[in-house]
Length: 153
Image 1 (cartoon, rainbow, N blue to C red):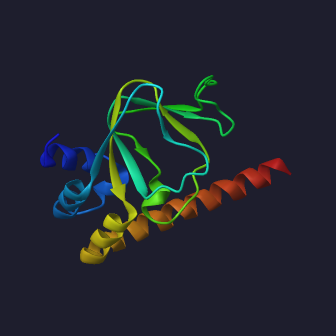
Image 2 (image 1 turned 30 degrees about the horizontal axis):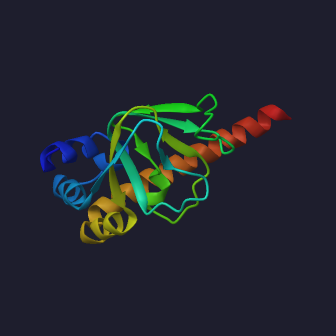
């Protein structure tokens, strides 16, 4: 893919849509393309991803933690082109809890945490937008959790 098509793909995702066009282009330029064959594990439980993975083409199954690639169980979720795997890994170091398995030949763009943080330092107005969006999401999550707790009792 070209830089512009990669940037357009990134811009279509909520987390990257908060960034200025030049910031998105910088991320697209620094992204690494990785190809996987059908059946390949893209990430496995215990992996410590360097960042997020955006599916460029193909489909990916998120499998339960105890899944074995040789005998895959029913996936928890199917992801298609344009989906982001590991959004939290863009911001902080995490340990992978699921298997992401290519169910057909798949290409992903890896956006490293280091690149993402560098862009946020260079574009502080984008960092402020992202911080506000995360704060809003956390507040909504806390409200939903409180509501479900009150319904349980």
